[in-house]
Length: 207
Length: 207
DNA sequence: CCCAGATGTGAACGATGCATACACCGTAGG
DNA sequence: CCTACGGTGTATGCATCGTTCACATCTGGG
Image 1 (spheres, rainbow over the protein chains, first blue to last red):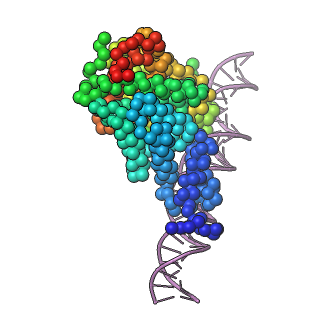
Image 2: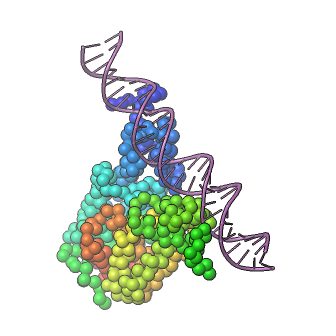
Image 3: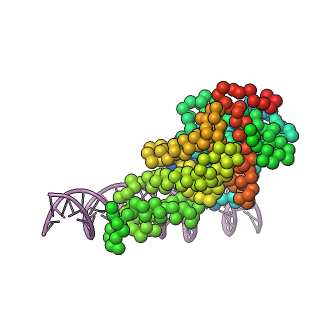
């Protein structure tokens, strides 16, 4: 346990300090790619020091992203711990989009980067999110193909988040966004039974 | 009309050449951010020459992105020129996702970059896409709130594209992807009437 | 013909990611 | 106690990048 020492030379816990610095930089300047040197500066340490704890820039970003996934999960859980009705699920969806809009740089780090899949921590964290969505969707719609429906709803919400992030949709007020997300999610869920069981897509409405 | 000259010093049409070079680089190395210098090298020109035609890197990227939007629009139109049934719309959706997977770097340039909205060409191009979606959705589902439904379907498809791009979904085979997209879109469209502004009392399953 | 403006060049600055060699410091073994 | 060692931070250096500026080179209109 490296207790934080008032010492000068050795930082105490640079690993965590780098993470914190990176997060701060991301929050402060939404654009501007995260610079390892800037992180080092903010941590009050030489430019190469972080390399003792992160093999390269990608590793730091992945660590930040992983932390972001965990925070996103918390954020969703806070919106509703165990959603079961469409309304509750919609609230969670709104929370997802809100998270993206409140932490745009972090969200981009989590998703928009090429993300080579060789980051244990990272794939684990995203798998956790994926499983979480599958679970609550499965609980809310028993008898439905949870895999398919959760993929669909995740994609819907994720897409809304990104389009808002890119200014492709009207994000003027949080209420507007929330209404949009809510209505979209409701639309999807109202069709959920259509995805049930062995349903093959061809059962579409030929009206 | 600057005809391509066999001359050395003046390139003939560097602006277009840069665009082409940039596209090639994006297609060849999906990762690795587009480097202005690399573009110049590929165009066989000094590192600073592109600045005569693009004020900065962002401008070049925006131009590439705008071209990408146009190509995406063509690609969608090729999938189906005037979709009206859910099946036809699903085909267009599949084309959208396929485009993203076939041109990942370009697609990222189009969407994943911070994209400050001060690029005329760019906002125009995305507005074109947005309008296109609205049009075909409106045509396929008259009487429905085309604005809301098209936003929803765009977000769904866009989200699917991004999640696939990031390896968060099973993209093992094109068929798998197509099936997933098709089923998701059908699910949404089967609920389309629920989005109708004048609330037709269609069999909304189980409240 | 000839000059003005458009276009391309070269050197240069500051920033970045990263590798390498070195300096510092707490601690375990004698 | 003291010494050697390994974990941690530093200094330096290299290649690349974006961007600027002064300069060179073409080309078209008077």
